[in-house]
Amino acid sequence: MATWKLVNVVATVSFNIKLPLDLIATKLENTRYDPEQFPGLVFRPDPKSRKTALIFNSGKINVTGAEGEEDVKEIVEKIREKLKEIGIDLPNKYEVKFQNFVVRGKFKYDSIDILRMAEEIDGAQYNPEQFPAVIVPYNKDNINVKFTVFSNGNFICAGLKDVKKVKEVVESFENEVLSKYSIK
Image 1 (cartoon, rainbow, N blue to C red):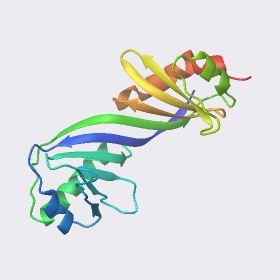
Image 2: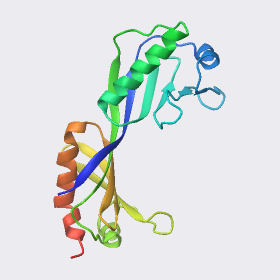
Image 3: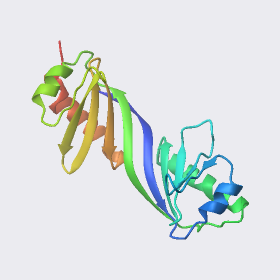
Image 4: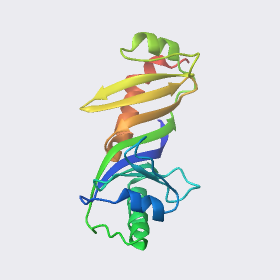
């Protein structure tokens, strides 16, 4: 049975108010704002962390680098607190939509024939000169994800929309697909 850990959560938070990005950029530390290059303000609540918020003037905020659903909420509350300090009040109620859960893990198999996977699975991508893993699309029960599989059995799975489905998807892929490519 595979073991795995949630390593990145991407979420969109909607406050449904206009945000003055020029003002925020001048008053808030750890920001980067260049509207000619990108329409959003990049904010890192903790510069030592990879957790990042992309703040848009529409009141939408994209959070990346979170390690779970609660972590997203903590980042949003930190943003609300920081904006309040500079005179911008965000509503107490907001909508959070989880866009992507990324997990990293290890399958129960220690040796995988990734070349054969690339040749036999429709849509698989493998270029060993650029990256030592095969990227395999996996679609089941309206779940569309991509597994990045390394020959030693390590993997990354991206594209999950519901954290409650991680175990089911990883186990299903391991049993239905990966087991056929295990080198015994």
